[in-house]
Image 1 (cartoon, rainbow, N blue to C red):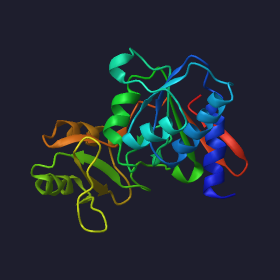
Image 2: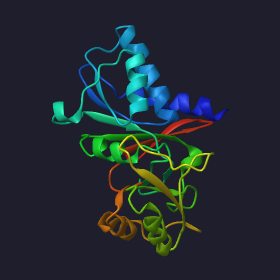
Image 3: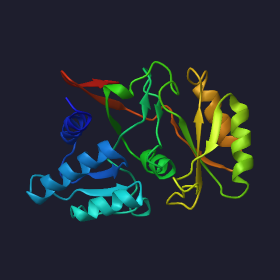
Image 4: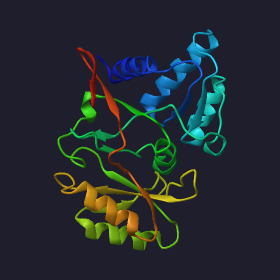
Length: 229
């Protein structure tokens, strides 16, 4: 079974949690793309009605509009019934690394407003220790960005400014830069690291999504199964 087949499978499973009248947080990334496309198809067929979404990136907003999914902002709604998103890594306690799709700040802002956060992944994203499989993305201010990256490298990791093939820093939808941090063997204490990152001027947000996911749907060759229920 190919990776895309697994992504379609888990996206279809997540769609079973959507009901007419819901306001959804719409995540960013390749797995969530399948979910949004399937959601749009069901809405166009009339199988789901009065569903509206809050996008976590400009790319997600454009995709949702192409499927005629009505969009609102967080300023217009008090809460979200459900948010659906992917993850770059998932630990046994449902800790997440997210943000390699370059939308981690908006993802976190949107998803803390959800009554329920549903994460959709395939088995290759499961890890016994966060940071063992994926680098940790960190959104940083452009001002003194390389100084911030030097500080990140003091946290027991290899840190670099995330640049494109031309050597130019990626710029997020929020006008910030991104760094990536590799931890050899994983992150020893994700909670402690999250606190240190959040307290540091110049760090706008980090990709540790801890104590946020309510359920993780995992696609495998034998089907979809749930963690956290």
